[in-house]
Image 1 (cartoon, rainbow, N blue to C red):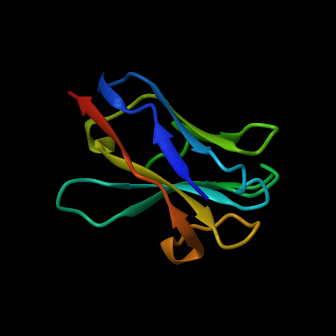
Image 2: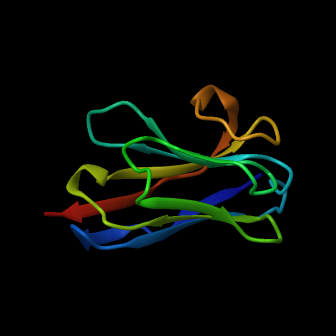
Amino acid sequence: VQLQASGGGLVQAGGSLRLSCVDSKRTFSNNGVGWFRQAAGKEREFVATIDWRGGSVKYADSVKDRFTISRDRGGNTVYLQMNSLKSEDTAVYFCAVARSASSSMSAAGYRYWGQGTQVTVSS
């Protein structure tokens, strides 16, 4: 598995970004995928997760109704659409491949992690 997260950048509060997580070796189509984030000086935290078929999604309370996780039909790209961004969303965002086909809200449920992409929201 080789994960590449992209799509981060600088955006004003209230704006939108879409992050992408690509599996260049096309091996995570049968696994759940999650997004986590880590702000400077803070612990990594769960953001969103999707199961292998895209039928089950879960979100952290802090992003519910603002962020949407999805995956393409081919299964090798997972997206995180982020709307109504707030300054507290500023962090490095990581995608990860779950140990199973299910979605998971725990970092322990993930086997592979990609390099992060920086999201900065200015107020």
